[in-house]
Structures are given as structure tokens and as C-alpha cells.
Length: 79
Ligand SMILES: [Zn+2]
Image (tube, rainbow, N blue to C red):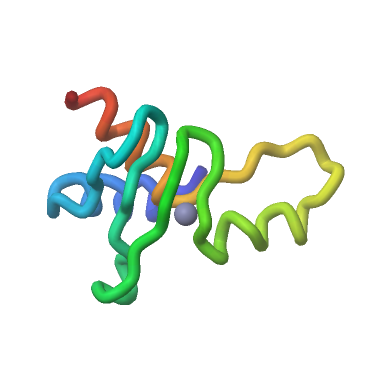
């Protein structure tokens, strides 16, 4: 995972952009559009980056990641 993804994720958590809305469901504000937010679980995300990952890396056995999934990981460590 790139350093910029981690940086973005930290910023999301620090700015209060992560909200727990269910057992394994979080609502995370989009960093590019404050009007928008994504529903994220610990292993899936609605954002285009996550969806594109599987489109481009399909069948390579890689696990998709994005700043939102990383934000949840950081959020859980802090809470
Ligand atoms: Zn995402």
C-alpha cells in the first residue's frame, strides 16, 4: 500500500470523517467531495478506487485496498 493512501486514511480519521454506523459498517466521508460518503465494511468499500482495483487486477489473488479500508483499520486501533 502506498504511503499516500496511509496519509489520506490518517487524515480521514483525524478529521472525524469516519463514523461507525453498524456492527461492521462504517460511513466514511469522501476526501474529494465532502457532500459524498461511502459505506465501508472491514473488507469492502463502495468507492471507485476499490471497485477498479478488482477490474484491473482480477484473478491475481490480490486484495483490494483503498484509503477508506485503511481508515477503518486506523479507526479500530484508536477506539
Ligand atoms: Zn474506498
